[in-house]
Image (cartoon, rainbow, N blue to C red; front, side, top):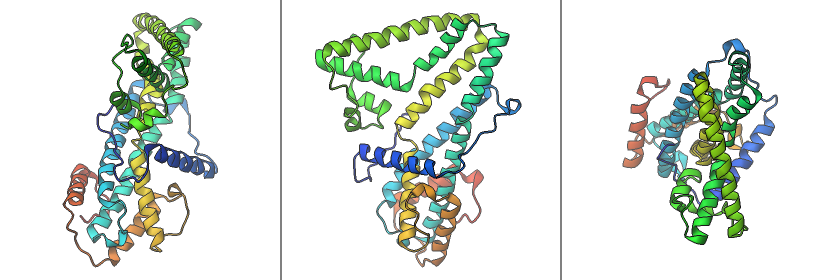
Amino acid sequence: MDTNLPEFAYYNGTILDLQHEFNTTVRDWIRSRIPLERLVTDESILPEPAMLLVELKTAWQRHNELGVYIDKTLNDIWGRDITSFSHSNLIFLANLVIYAAAADDRKRKASILIKPVIEKELNRTHAQEKLSTEEITTLLGTVSHTAYLQRRYDLLGLAYTEMTGDMTYGNFNRPIIAQKYFAGSVEYLQAYMPTSLTVEEVYMQLQSIKERKEEMDIHKVYLLIDHPSLRNLEELLRFDNLDEYLYMMNMYGMPEYLLRRYITEELTTNGLMQEKGNPLFYSPEEIRPALIELAERTDTKEENNESLQKQKEIFYTYYKHESPPHDDN
């Protein structure tokens, strides 16, 4: 997991409010997509699990780093009238929108290959490794190590510790768990605490999850010793059910959404784009020309904003080897 998280210091509301807004917006966007995007699953072009893992880790790392970067940039622009920006800062925002969309697209394209690759690899290993039904079940037991199960276990452990003072199940504390699952928000964490359970019920659920995980782990260790070729598939299953969900729980994609929301609201308010309501209904290819058009109109050549200037310099240094056309920083 990345140690740096988006902070959303500029957002006038709670993390729960933000998550609800985002979920509603994404749901409306998905419903509007007709036909829905379909993945070509020709097995001959699917990558091997090891290759896909490398691409997944690279794509998600880039996406998450950019999310944290955009979050810091939003501190300098949130709430400002976009027509007050200088020419170079408007061009910077135009380029940032494109790069953010590209990072999200790369991550998404890698992620939608996971299920077809897993299915192909399961068929291959069942035939070549002569795995029994029990061994296949053990391998798929990786799915039991989901982010949601781990979050539930840690929240139960936290509740048990706070109720009894007993740290038998681990040294649980709110800031660490908030950092792991809730974008660092203790308030967001509280909404998921098992407050309706008694201490006995908390204990029983904790023990049940612990025993289940330990049993599956033991079986899996022996399976991978007997079949080392399954390690990449096991790691891919784990990434699919654990890592990706932890990234989503920590809202690394939220800053890109908020950037698009801020820019589209400002551009529509100033009559530079047609009102569509949902920020996700605007493509980066629509947003960028509108920002460039505004930049060409502005008389402001530079701003006295050291923080934003620093963010702009970081961006162009980080992406200098792939600068888009019309780049003018």
